[in-house]
Amino acid sequence: MAVAEEALYSTLTGAAPVTAIVEQRIYPDMIPQDAGIPAIAFLRTDTEFINTIHGAVPVGSSPLIEVSCVQTSRELAHVLANAVQAAIAPEGFTIDGRRSEQDPETGLWATVLNVTFNE
Image (tube, rainbow, N blue to C red; front, side):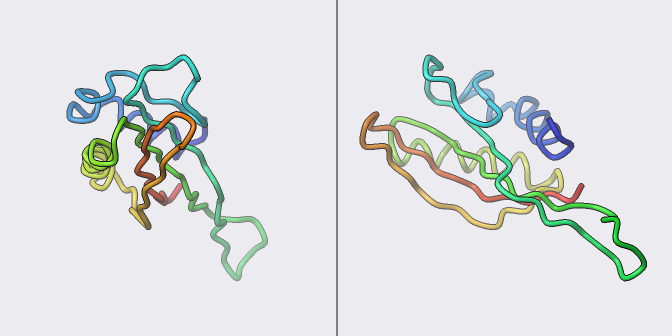
């Protein structure tokens, strides 16, 4: 995992309000099919590089990460997302957006947080 993903994983697994809900079901990329619910998956969807006028080599990056908080209902997905948001905001993650999704095949709900982090 890259720096942002490692920081996110470490923060989430160390946050008691989050692990009280999902235990250790926090996964990079996607939730395994045989995993229990509730669970969290996170995925880097883009990276914006930070450049200066003094050179072509980036001096840093700001990845965009989607954090999917998956639960059995919309309300429970929001409760999990609130716990995630409270855990990651003080650790340098910026919440850029939030949306709800529902999977018609499984009936599961997700609240998806779009977050950035300066590496």
